[in-house]
Length: 334
Image: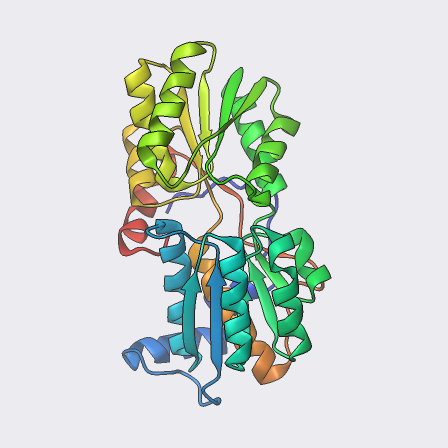
């Protein structure tokens, strides 16, 4: 299997070894539990009480990234005998209300994203005050500890952006556009900030209406038509990479299209050369480990991270890695 290039040394603070590697006595037991769960065809691999965990994300409808996060969480829930509840809303106030609803249900654990942390602070505080353990995932690593969460699982968005800037330098790029598809999302701004910090060339930001792919395409196409110096487009989500390719073709541009996040289309684009590289933050792992860590906390008062985020990325994925990832992206786990 191809070795994925990692821009920064990333250790999953034991989480990955617990669930996937099995290189210690504890890890071996966890791996064996996973095998037993598979053999049981969907039955739990543990006999702990059937705790209820709610995951509330800022996902919009039809976002393939969050399908992968949810898939990981659901599979860990089966193994850990967890009753898993998933809900989402891309409007921050509505997302906060969903957290409040989970608190009212007296769930045993909450997993939440903090894409717009100011709007989520009171709801998370209410959960913590009620004695419900909270794990944050994907976005809000800077606010997670302050808000009282046990830990944060995801990638550091600034570090991920810096990785992109370094990669663009290696590729000799001089002028890039960072396409932000969700205004107010602090993680997206941090990604572009990171790119700008390490990129030796010129970086411009293009704000688009991410809920309308035709609008995204037309806005980017217009940008590429009016500014022929742009040699790179960086999208901040896998679904937007394909739209960026179409905008490039419509503008008759030679710009390279690169993206954050991975799905089957991105893997195919890497393989056929329509995309340069992708930054993978392993969403399946974010969902899986969030549920698993809440189970470990309820069962054994375990907390990973030591007060620091448990990192799941970034990994720079290129054409060389596409074949190795094909099966995983097709089954919806990468």
